[in-house]
Length: 379
Image 1 (cartoon, rainbow, N blue to C red):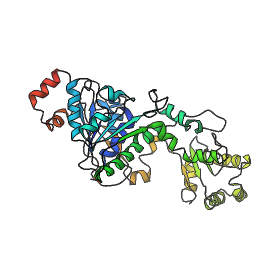
Image 2 (cartoon, rainbow, N blue to C red):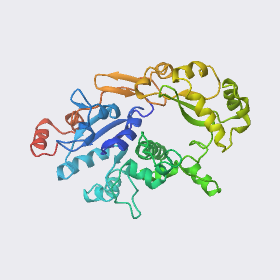
Image 3 (cartoon, rainbow, N blue to C red):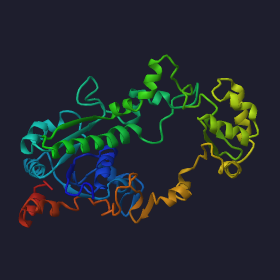
Image 4 (cartoon, helix red, strand yellow):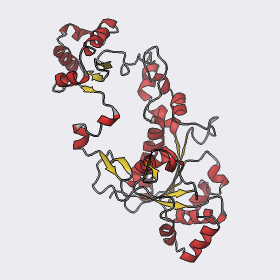
């Protein structure tokens, strides 16, 4: 697989770092999840449970191995540094300064392995007045401006159902940065320290909105081109309480939709702020059920699709044909979105400390020493 032979030490908890290393593990990297003895990653115990462990944890921690190490103990710190010597990447999600206080900061790990790539995922970055501030996805989206744009016109901001800053700024973008840094190392360069901020990531995804605002256009909830301002790009309620998405942005799609709705008079009002066109489509979609609209519009080449509830997604013909969702004893998993190779699923999400003996044996730690470490609370 593309990343076979790459070893990654994952010291993170919860969603962002786990999603980042999941992307890399699915491409073949040997991801070793380093967890606190006894408790481990907090997400392990988040309901619902599947086989005695969180189904949420299982969904984003497949293809990884788990080692327990008490990094506050000298022996635990020393073992991690020995693992660093043979690793390519270290990913951590502590607040700025924590790794230094543990004696595991960038200067220390870089000295032990000059080729190591270290990625620090935080809410607000390594510097600035908010660097040490606590937060979660909703706070990062609020600060970045994304939350303020989400919702109906003249209504309150609506929390996104998907954790955009966590997954995008704290998962996807760090993974891209890590891959770029690894390419640099393979070309003969040294390792580097990546400062990955979830807020920064969220701001970067607002590039078009910020450019629109700077250009003098109004950017507010429900007033943007792609957030309900125009009737050609909106969600409409159906007679049965279902919803239909209309994204007929190009004139040819809008014209085709108006023809199918038998309203050719609306063609020239595609980008009009006149409420007449909005009301016309609202009334039409409210006159039929979602299924009736699906039967009428499914063959139409006009960018119109029913809004699915979560329980409908696995059986959708496109989702099913792509085999995107799989069910296992450990819960439901979504396969990698990018198809690089088959055989992407090599192992279930690990039990806490399941691979401590295996991984530490690779360092030359024998069974008697393992027992001593266990007794001392190091593992």
